[in-house]
Length: 108
Image 1 (spheres, rainbow, N blue to C red):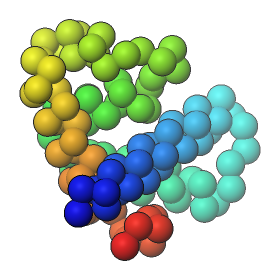
Image 2: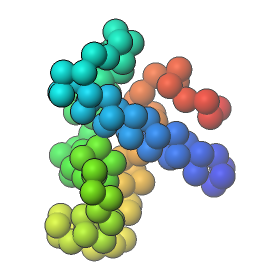
Image 3: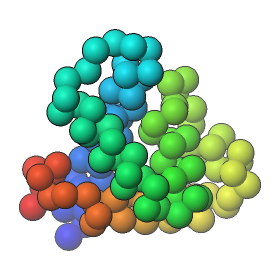
Image 4: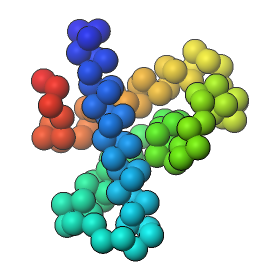
């Protein structure tokens, strides 16, 4: 289970980083395919289902993190303890896994 959970979180992180890159291309006016637009819209819809704090943690950690800001900087910015930050981050990743269609993931 632990290894499976690690793989699930890795898949979600890759998906969020891909979403981030596609969204930047789309905002800059660079052409994206119809399936890429659908991915952007679907992820935006599902990210809104998370709590405000969960969404903010994922946004700062993966989506809007061009400068490679470390987790401890983000947790300080959000005024969270280290344990709380990682618990929220972990819960948000697993919640996304549960609400997104299974066709996004290779992990069974």
